Amino acid sequence: MTDRRAALEAALKRLPVLPDGEAKLQRALDRLETLADADQPISDIAFRLTGKAAAKRELKTLVRDARTLDAEALGLRIRSMHAPAIKALADVGFTRMPGGRAAAAAAAVADVGSVPTNAGRGRSQARNRANVVAAQLVIDFATLTGIRPTQKPVQGLTDRVFAILGIELRDKANSTESIVREAIKAWSAREKL
Image (cartoon, rainbow, N blue to C red; front, side, top):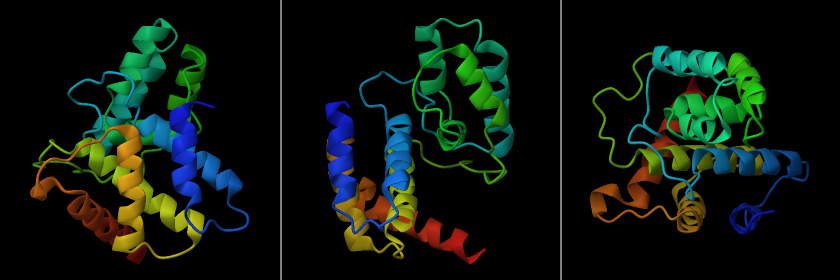
């Protein structure tokens, strides 16, 4: 277990995790590591939101090219994908870089059906990495605890995870508080559907 994964696990275990939550906790850790690989350089499109069609294209291209790319190129390709495609890979369990066949298989079954058609259009991209991680933390909070996410506990978790991942927000407009508020609002809207 890496130091980062151990720190993320300690942060998540501060939550009142449900008794049957160990498997969910491990999946949450896998998703966080996939979504926020702070140790690796990422392209300028990584973690940006995108619509369903673009996410499907990225996964289709990954299926086509994964077997021919070397490990370094494959890792760079995945780290530079848009947020919905990266999350779809994480959701089917692809969280490590075992090789092209595993990446192709994961991309072939990855589902982006819940991605809105027009996600991310006209949106500022300056804080997308923070937005993606915060949105996942809100979902993980609800899944692990069975409690409706609220600002104070989710913000505490988000502050800890951002510190571990090296995500820094420098101004009030891009504060953790505003990002968490938006993520909770989005989660609540999805829950009402």
